[in-house]
Amino acid sequence: MTRLLRPVFALTVLALLAACGGPTHPINPPNASIQQIDVLPDGRWKVQIRLENFSDKTVHYAMLKASLRVGGVDAAEIALNPDMDVPGQNADIVETTFAASADAQKAFPTDAKGPGGAPYELKGTINIPAAGEPAVAGAGHRQRISLIDASRRTEGTGFPSVRE
Image (tube, rainbow, N blue to C red; front, side, top):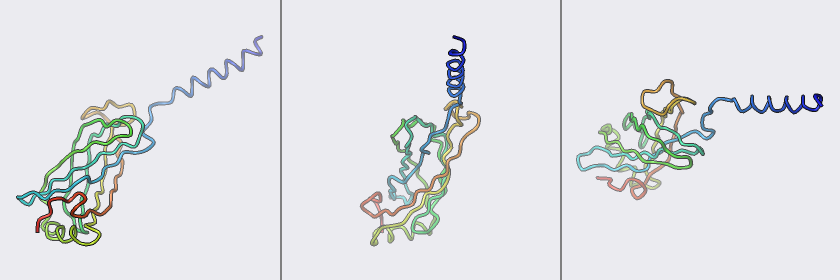
């Protein structure tokens, strides 16, 4: 009888050891993309950034740092602390307002109205709590996820208030 129990005991121990694996990071890393850019009457830009969670688990977005280029020109450095949870397979929007560089302000209206629209690139990092860390501001270690979002926007797709 003990010969029969040994394999059962061994399998049980292996199953318990496999379950002891620590918390893991999302298999599908989070991302961010430009949702919309508005040029305000005073010349500043209001940018809506879409925080995207492709994982099936909730992800806490602690910080986002990125460079925005529009029309091949550096527009601004963006640093946000959204400090928000985005449920699995969902997205949320954060906004920021800034004064774009003079070169970007000159190039942007022409590019946005041209055929194919204005090319843009958002490149930087998203910080999320390390696996097993509490999802609160200032919590221990963070995992940095690289983000790159590059596309084109026309006046009618995300640039509704382009001024001449």
